[in-house]
Length: 416
Image (cartoon, rainbow, N blue to C red; front, side, top):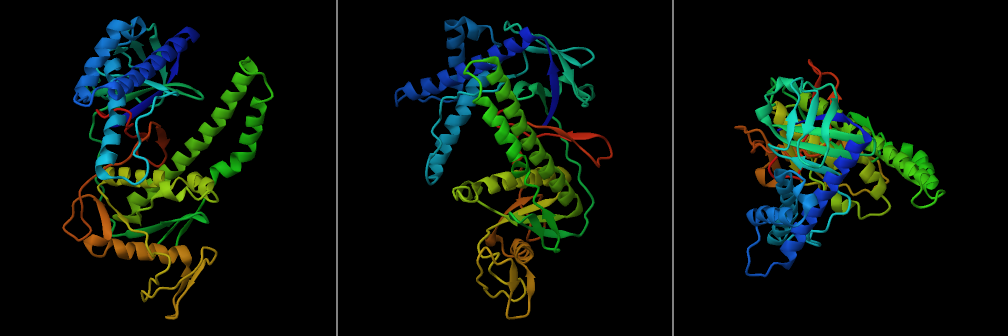
């Protein structure tokens, strides 16, 4: 599935209509959650029941009926996605909170399926045909959606961001492009001193996008509270503050995407640590730096590009990768402040490089030591293909033979 994104240009009244559709989607989702909560235990509330409940809401509320019927169903699918995830966590006995479905307060998108929209013959404009009054929207972007048949467009989503509104097209196409083998294998150790160090001794500097923009962000945040609540100046200040955070998020995504693409193209196998970032950020001394590094996002892009280009990726357990010697295997205990690995066998390496070598060795070792994912192979490093990429952003990747944009599946809808 490929997601193509365009910037939306419209009149003020059309933006207000889009906002109305977004609020209606949030209302339907929350009502579906409430319906599930209040249902008696003997009643099995599933995806089909919630989909039928959207018709009840359409008959009861006129503003819900004004929204396209399939958009209403897509809203109940979001509710079922949260419920299904909660059931799954309970069944797996996940430690801690199980993610009980919550009522949404900040929905930012409305999603249409096969109806409720119509593309202009030039495919540079789209008309939303329900009764919300959105009408015809102009689309700005470098992607030429006319290269795809309209029948391949499975979803259309209108998204609000800090810098405006966007229209996304979920196109059902196979964009895999297998590459010739390179004979290279690489192990990666992510960190805070360097973004990552590989088993070949190379380092990539940590960009620290949030840290660099933090002073400017805090200044814009202080300006919000200088203005009276509900005033236009306060609203504008909040918009500026949100735009600065959005810029940092886009920088982080583009950085991770470019690095992952370079690694996957140059290596047949990429091995990395299977880190539990959710638990790591509980350390309040390092939480901001860990979130700023966005290790998990980097991992997801590696997996996405590996599936696209027919490469292998392996997540290994991170235990003792920094402590064990990559030369003789002896355990050399060291604190986080010790940045050089020195072993009695004479091996002396930068700490992260030693860990990266150990990660690659574990990836090439017995099957029960690693969590293997990637393309099927006859070697011991084989596995089954799986794509965990997600998100809603798209951007142009430089270095492609053609101008190429990639995007990922948004898990708001289980049908994508």
